[in-house]
Structures are given as structure tokens and as C-alpha cells.
Image 1: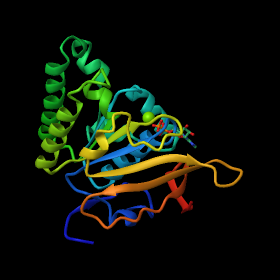
Image 2: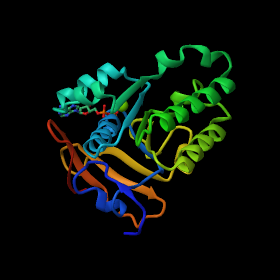
Image 3: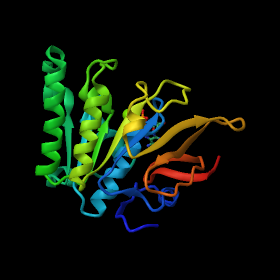
Image 4: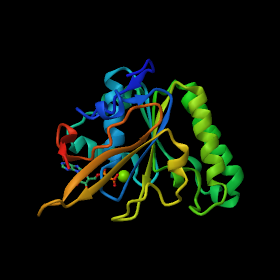
Length: 238
Ligand SMILES: Nc1ncnc2c1ncn2[C@@H]1O[C@H](COP(=O)(O)OP(=O)(O)O)[C@@H](O)[C@H]1O
Ligand SMILES: [Mg+2]
């Protein structure tokens, strides 16, 4: 392991696969099909930060924050105190930005990116999750400016250097892809792929690092379970 400061994802036994955790200040992609555990991983990452006194910002797009909070409470995680104290904040993007984004996509995207970065800097956010990233900044997934804005956002976050971000990316069912656009994976510093596999009669959940700049990664695909009280629980290699 080198000298760079690293953050734990909060999954016991998994940090060693990435040479000791996520590199502080970098941006990572968590991809996988619906139900593969992206939101659960995002919240587990947030909770691990709270344990270390690191402020978190969760930007939710597909699911209402209230629903995410209900779901993780069902998982046995108590986020009420963190929400009260402001050490964990949720932004509901649909509420926050309304429908302006549909009128002038380019200027609204610029504003969204600027607003997020400003929020992160002013509130000294250490862990950021945007779940999922493309619809957060673009209403049209085929917009030709996605690469430009995404790169700009990641560069601004990474040059700020104090906030470690997870962007989620939904992939089609059964697909080996990392994103629908093919763009996100090229821009981020690392990729975690979630999925399902059926090595024997039972379908199992899988997790693996696919890319991790600056780290000697272990590419092993592990089985995992989602358990009340623990969240993502790593099992044996697939
Ligand atoms: N308390 C729980 N116990 C076991 N599994 C759970 C629990 N809560 C959620 N899950 C599992 O987590 C899955 C949802 O994962 P989620 O993180 O929302 O996936 P994604 O964000 O990739 O769509 C559910 O489909 C369910 O199987
Ligand atoms: Mg989700």
C-alpha cells in the first residue's frame, strides 16, 4: 500500500481488494443491474463515513430520500441522529431543480454541476453519493454533452480533493456493461461492478473491482449477501 490516504467502503474484507480502500478525493463508479445493491452499497459507504466523523451527502434521483431512509432502517441502520445533526444530508434532485432542466439542458446541467460542487465545498462534505449519476445531470441519456460535463464534474471534485464520491450507474439486466452510455467508466478513477451469477442451482449476488487507478487491485469476484444489521456481507470468491 502506498502513501495515499484511503477510505473504507464499510464492507468487511473488501478493502484489501483495492489496496486498502478508495483513494481520498477520487470519484468511483458503482454499476450493476436493478436490485444488485448499488443503493445499499452507497448507504453502507455513507454510514462508514459517519462512524469516522465524515460528513455525507446523498443525492437521490430514482428513489425518494424518505424511501431510502425507510429501506436502510429496515436493514437495521439508524440514520436518524445523523440526519438530525446534519452530518448526513439528502438532496432530492427532482425537487431541488424542478423542471427547468428540460427547457435548456446545457445551462441547467452547468448549474446543477456548479451547485453540487459548491454544496460539497461549503459544507465540507467528505463522502458524496450520486445515485444514479447520468439522470442527475442530464434528462436525456443520449445527450452529446454528457462526456464534457461528466469530465468537468469529476475534474472539479478531484481537484478539490477532499471529497470521495461514488456515482452509481444502472446497467441493463444481465449486461456485462458498466454504464448505458459507455462514458462514465472512462472518466472515473475506479469501478465496482455488482451483479448476479448462478454458479450452481442458486442465484448469488456478486461484487468485484474492475478498475482502480493508483492501486494494485485484486480482481476476484466475491459472493455477497445483504443482511439485516450488516448490509453487504462478503462471502467466498465466486
Ligand atoms: N433487510 C434486507 N434483508 C435482505 N435483503 C435486503 C434487505 N433490504 C434490501 N435487501 C435486498 O437489496 C435489494 C435492493 O438493493 P438496492 O441496493 O436497492 O439495489 P439497486 O440500487 O442496485 O437497485 C433488494 O432487492 C433486496 O433483495
Ligand atoms: Mg438503487
